[in-house]
Image (cartoon, rainbow, N blue to C red; front, side, top):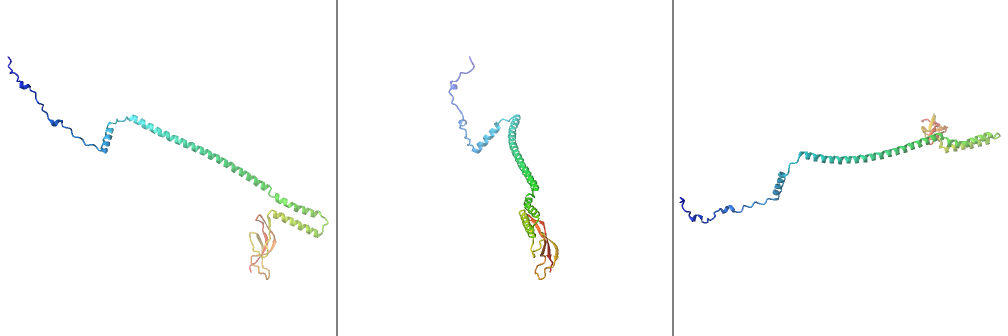
Length: 230
């Protein structure tokens, strides 16, 4: 017989559950973050979650980028060099053409000067041939009278003056009383003015020998006498 007392059926009665209702209450609702706070939280998470790049691959990437930049710069410089070379060739061609034109112009000018020097007296000599013909014809006429000789000499002189004028050889023959011009006149002597004359000092009294101009250049000054101061 057992020593244990019989079991009391009341011990097996359904026991009512006992619990703390406060443990199952709804958790407090967290406040909604602002847009700035959400952006900051996203950036922090991305920075924390981003893997650390490999230094080797980073250097390779930098080298590739730098190589592409250098290649672009080299291509630009190559194109610029090609343009400069083309411009240089164009300028060299222009220089050669201009030099050839200058050389041709200089050669033509030298030829013209040479011809001018060689044939400078051609026109002048041609205009003097009639004068020579007249002189020879007058000398060939043996029985000419003094009047005929004078008429022939005057005609020959007119021919000579006409020939000189056609070649721009003009006489310097100042009138009495004209102002003395040292550029065209050469004073042989200084003489007193004629008695009773109102001629000013340093004016021409008489012309001893005509002077001549050729193309407005003094070929020979006129020989004159000049009035003395009163």
